[in-house]
Image (cartoon, rainbow, N blue to C red; front, side, top):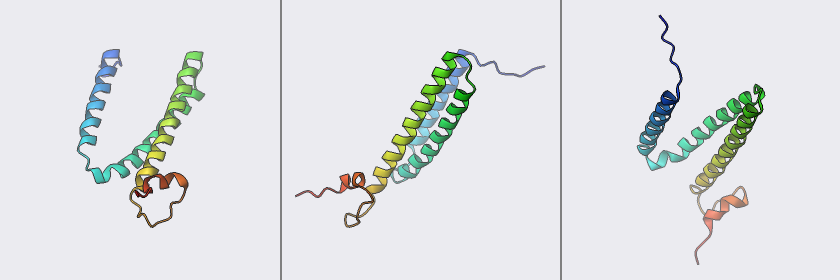
Length: 114
């Protein structure tokens, strides 16, 4: 007797909706002070997604698989880079206004109101 699960479109849609709902509930219950570490941790996961996309791209045979792999790597890398940029800006908000910023973009938040 085999208990293999056949991944049909309905099962895939069910898993996607369930994962989305679970993520929404979990993120909604995180206190505001923990959003920066949570964002940093999710950037790590995006890096794993990029590695998985590279694996899929390198093992692609047909042009459709190569296209999907290319866009997986492109969008995953963009998502990871954007996440790190946002995390950097969030961390810059916790620095005191007297501290000299490490680079110009971090100083955007410290403009003094006259």
